[in-house]
Length: 467
Image (tube, rainbow, N blue to C red):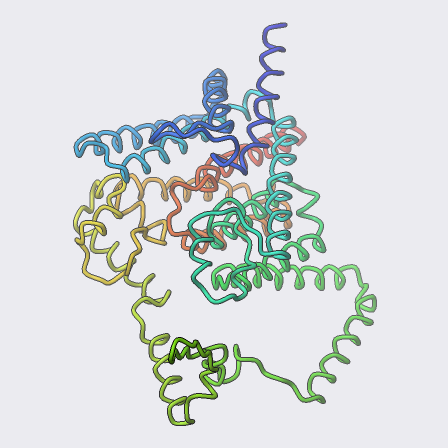
């Protein structure tokens, strides 16, 4: 009995430590050993996984089946990598599959070891801390433009100063990755944390902050998601007031909005370059440097060029921006088209780990994608590389969601909305980062979804016993 109590206490301490170090990954006290980096969260994962296996007898058939599938997927990827000598790109994806497997063992095993109440308590605390870290770092970066140094900050040195200099990145070295993490952690916490779920004003505030960050990052996907979250919360708040028959409490806000609208339409407005003719601003800040007899002279382009010359330069700049094959929309489209070609090449078992990047680097693709080697689309990424294993993975997600939907009467309306938000957001989140398999938010999704199913099933059993 004493041994079980000590083991439970150890598991609790390790799990709390694991959650608290989760946001930082290898950036927290990481020690590079060539192809492998050792860091606190990885060490805690390797300790917690065997402890999680101790609760294996409590696992359901579905959980065991999913774990078995993930293990077979990992073994097959290792086999595919071994055939070509474990190239760098293959090792990267194999490591991601190892972490995917271990994180499932950690979360499901710890859930059964600690029990529902303790697991929920520490998971909520852990994800609140995760969200706090992301928001705090994001606000500081937004206010002062200071970032953790990386590849992206090197790129910023070559760009004209703009809003993207103040878009948060945290340790992820990319604005889209940061926003994907922020939105995912926020929506997952919303699934588990009843207090957050029922606090619509706090939910609205978080959504507004995310929208501001997304606007500065110029991330269209994140802007769509956060704007949708804002609209949803406003609709919920208005509906709640109607239900409570407190519509008149909203009257001052309605009047304030009407007065603002009148002010907007009765005063002249300056429409900036984003919504007016941005071509008029093309030459702002463009300078011509002349050097004569050892003297440097810097002249504004508008002062040097005639009106006809200015028009020619503006037209050229516009054609470069609008017709460039390096534009974001063109690149994403071409990456998808290349991915579809790769899927046709190996439709059953895929190209193998790292296969998408390797095909691009070997110039075995039809459509121009500049220097990009990642798919920027998670379904394309894993279907092209792992074939049938990817299809089974998505089928498992669907099976779990169907199982949850069958228990809908045991789920509150607020909880249903939280599920709906995450499910609508997920396909968009899959397209935001350059790659998704290696992100810890990918490793977290399936086990957390399974735990949601376990929690709802337990609730349904308790309700049946009461009846």
